[in-house]
Image 1 (cartoon, rainbow, N blue to C red):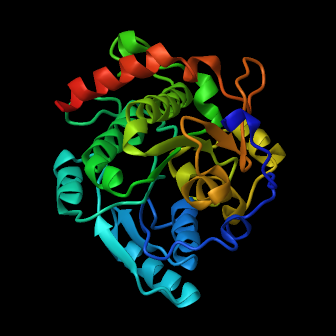
Image 2 (image 1 turned 90 degrees about the horizontal axis):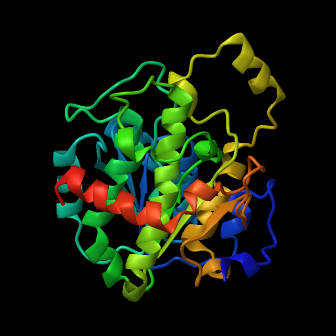
Image 3 (image 1 turned 135 degrees about the vertical axis):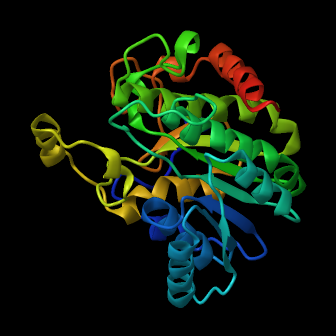
Length: 309
């Protein structure tokens, strides 16, 4: 069980330390948002262990530069770049339709954070919920057959401690009847990530697919903060935050993607390369609203309806 794990890692552990000694030869992995930050570092770690890694990115020019750098640093020539726009259903369908063969590792890493103004997709969906949850939901659903064919696949869903900011407000997910708040909207999307992992772990257990959610910690240099308005109040928080390096931030998702120490774990929530327990008061714990099995099932159904799956 996830809550009985005794892992030899902590908040200072790096992706390189987690992957040490792991052999991923003949394994195939996809990392979304791998053109920078945590995604690039995760792809590098998986490639260093011998995996064939596909960088699923919006900007393929930048992605190609990252792929070349990963190959140069790891000696692994099996690093590929494929275009993926999580806001575009046509792009997602093209990506999943073009995949051939089994898929052993899927890291849903891409995301946007705290858009200062309410932004909607052409479908009228709130942008953070659409990108962070619905895009990855459609992608993972589309790759289900490939994951099942791997006989022991792993899906890692990157969430955030900010999920404490909001449950999924089913009555008004897209802010049509309530005031928009950028951090609340981001928190809602990150709660959705965890609920998706819980429900997918349940639905796909018979297919041998393990699904877990993780919180990478506070990492300044990832590009995720590019939309955030740094007010004087927020600057005080930034200055007081114990930031992780990108290498430390990627450790938890690499752990769940590749380590044999968590091979049998599914439906868990991890941070600092360890399983995290439910807590109403600890901001680093798992909020009860993000561990609600009924909410997870409801979100799955609504997501299918929105995406017409």
